[in-house]
Image (tube, rainbow, N blue to C red):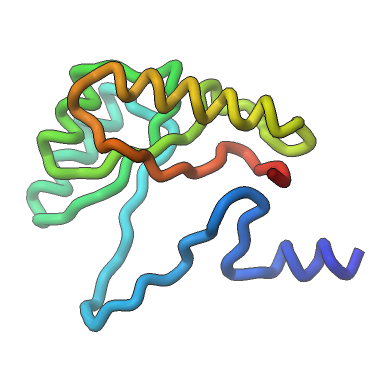
Length: 131
């Protein structure tokens, strides 16, 4: 129980993969991330604001929701694309093959389009499992 309490209060923790919690830089930066898309409403609302303020973001996409023209707009705006699983199912207490399949299917879906980065960052949807 003490271990779970420490994990729940940790500022930087990941059960799967490497958690990126800090980047060494002398610049004052904020990382803007957007999850669970792409949706037309989200892209239409966010991209003009990012452009207006000369800001860039990372869009963590759900594989089954990938719409090529929306992803193209995100990439054309100079933003990053990330992997947020294929179906956005809870990943806690799943075996590693479930986790691997969710990530692999999204990578394949996004890479079908010649518009994305070679390697996608991954943000696990609804929890994680040990590798």
